[in-house]
Length: 213
Image (cartoon, rainbow, N blue to C red; front, side, top):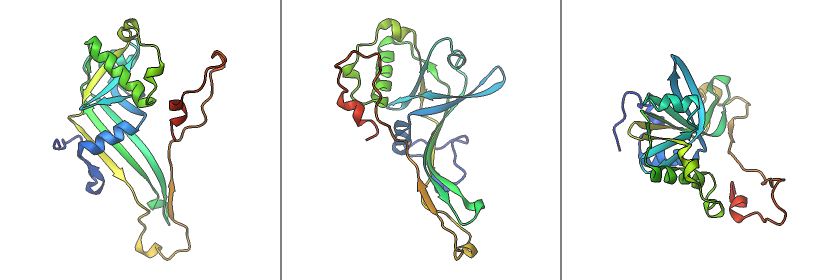
């Protein structure tokens, strides 16, 4: 486990996690990340899909987008991922909180030039979003892959912060006749909606119904 740096050190020791298995699990569960960078002296934060392979986080996008044009230059980024697990309702407004799992990654992304690696990364995106989807798809073309910028960001400087459990009230408030507790939250999938332009007779594959189940 890499030692935390000044930038990744979590000030709340009771919520700090530096184990790679914890960081990896949060990155893999989250569907998207927020990528912070500076563009022409202006701070910008963009939500993006991401994928992880081993010790590397990958981002991708169109070559004309501002974020890709900026990050291709090797500028520093801060990538954050948050999973909101619940609302924590205390006996006072001051002690209300939220249960969450979050990861922060710092570093300089680099462009992935190797075509085979880009194919593998883009396949990983599909596998992450919808497991078992790829065997049902046509293969990506070389033209499509070359038209996509893929950036790699090593997970050398990363940390997780986690809050779980119930409210923490002041001792003098514990006897108040006020409900306190946790309202769990979770991202859930709704019923799939068929594309109205799809040819009649095409059955929905099992992997589509498994999402979120």
